[in-house]
Length: 232
Image (tube, rainbow, N blue to C red; front, side, top):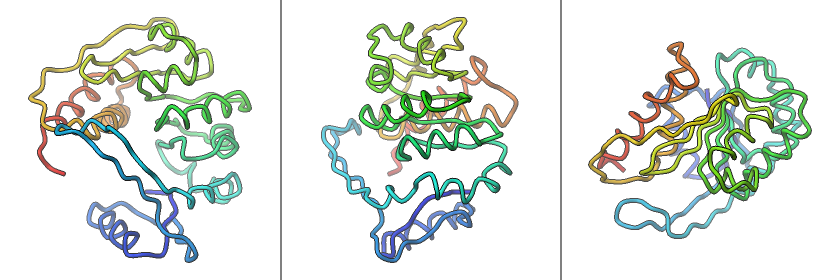
């Protein structure tokens, strides 16, 4: 089930149709007639590395604490909740404090990662897992050493921390130990979405009873699949 906000435009119609084809339920999502759908436009090199990007995400400001609170009962009927830092810090803090199932969070960008740090300071609970890249980890902790940064994130209240390093693999930490897992050898076609694929693999692993270090092969394999794919 996808819980988000759509604008009232052709792009929203396209997105909804795409979700329907993939059997993604939208009953928790809402459409705002006076807004257009959020847009993220990136310019990339020949293998998908982002060189510059622009966005217009005004509608996401409506995904606030009140909106989250109104849907909390249905959220807690899930087995897993996946959120990101497009939610503001108050909405994130409320979600963390009131979610009774494991929460996975993607920090999205260094600027927005700070929202999670602020939310965790306000929260009484922590989260189950975080996926971030090295720039986002630094934004959260101001620690340059990646293993030390991952452990610091555990101390903020995150049980499992995955810091993705692109071609260099992943740093994983559970607070007791932090170590490096190399990326799988791949025929690189397009790196766009490889971090998202990694998180999807980690979530899939959890659904199969694998978590923490045991989930790493799933995430790395998912990244390899997307990197080698020529599909848009």
